[in-house]
Image 1 (cartoon, rainbow, N blue to C red):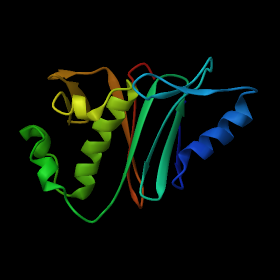
Image 2: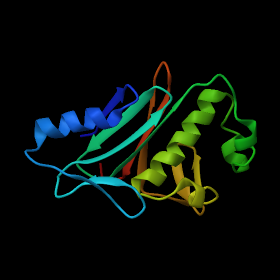
Image 3: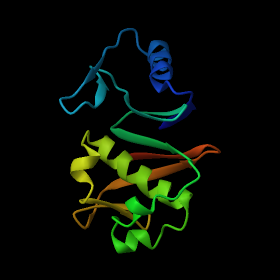
Image 4: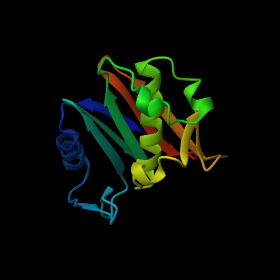
Length: 157
């Protein structure tokens, strides 16, 4: 079961509250690439923040999450760098954020860096592609009044 929370700009505080309720002891560590994890815990998590909001996703297995707030503009300079078939699905700011957050959530699932994966990852037709191959992951979007969030998990969930 995946739990998703829209928070104020400190999703880590909500994470700490959830962990305190469920685990006697916990320690949040980070991998070499900076992905946080809980040592020895059955819970996995990912969080993101944008402006004054945060998104926290908690799951029993690997998870990546991203949140982007509406800013009232379409990012044409970024969109034109997307592959053509992906560009064809983007008509407005919401569409751009659906694509952007899906890419980011996938990259965060594996603790990678978006700058290094930018040209390799694509979101098209509701699926994530890496180097042109469909990946066995699920993307779930959350459209809020303030922006768009995405959560990525491995297909088995």
